[in-house]
Length: 139
Length: 313
Image (tube, rainbow over all chains, first blue to last red; front, side):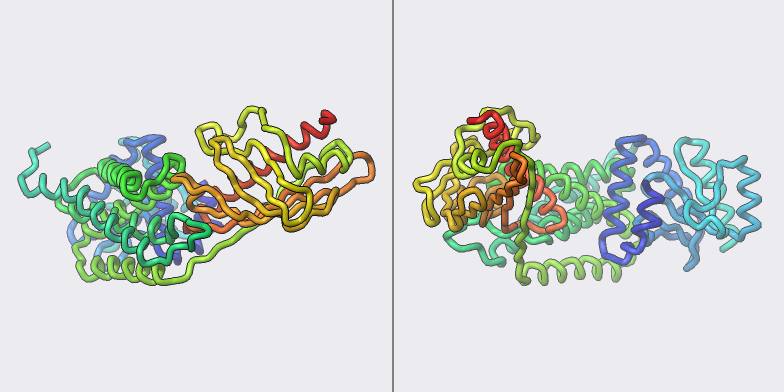
């Protein structure tokens, strides 16, 4: 459902408020399905913000984007989906290292972006490690 | 968890009180700034899209602003949004005299936008960029002002068609007037108390004669038949309709119509049309409800006509 909306209605991100409405719906859905995901997302946010020179901003699709300086480290959507930009070679490495937990980006499969769903503590730890790697590359 | 300081306790309270005061003032401004309808319709006022979109987003942003130093979890921010929505709903009951069904329809919309504003506020107030934050609130207020001062006009038509297994001569008298509908309600809004059509009576059988459509709670729509073509078409204008705190205060049914077509095989195609005017925006949300309600009014009447005609009444 998420992928469908992003793929076919992604152009609506330019309409003010709509991305945040989408994010609110995602988070309300997460409250209903697995509210602990929101806590994992908070932990990820707090951890990333504890790193030097990091900041957050609303993502263009309504999630939370993490930056170091002006460069994006990655972002997280309200359903626990973490997207992180890498070079393609790093992406392949991460997919193998994580034994498939880290996947190709849910939309841009040929890019260097990776995606992973945070559903439990292990996923959260993995997401933090992946974001740390992105942070170290960009810092 | 550390106990809250006096300042943090105060901020916690303000996160609930201030957004609702702001909403109360803005909704009040919107209601008095937007021209009310005339005495004929007596509509309970236009609710512009800002009332259900911009104001809830602002409520969320303001609530999140007061929580910016409390480092609370997202789930608690969502809780704050739920509380602020509930308070706004209660204030609507008290001050705007809105009915329960109306609030049932509106609440999900308000909750989603308050939540969107609250979660957006959680992120942007962590950035500590006051220029962006003030600009955002300013932009929302500007949209609010433009929306309130703009014209709001929306009319639509709903059309439904059924096949009645009876000749047109049997169907026509039932279209003009029908005995009380005794069939159980099957539309969920009717089941929980929204008035549904029960009976129709006429005081003549010609164009210009009066017609009454009586609803389940005793409400009466006074109609004037403007086209009366036996076995073909009945069109009537609504001359007066009840106002109540429920949805009827926010929608005007302007005209109704039944078109009958003889299918030449002993059956009749019956088409029911209604034209209505909405007083609540955004249309994309409320027209979906208006269409659903109007459609179910049609179908309740048309199904009754079908049952009666096919039974040979």
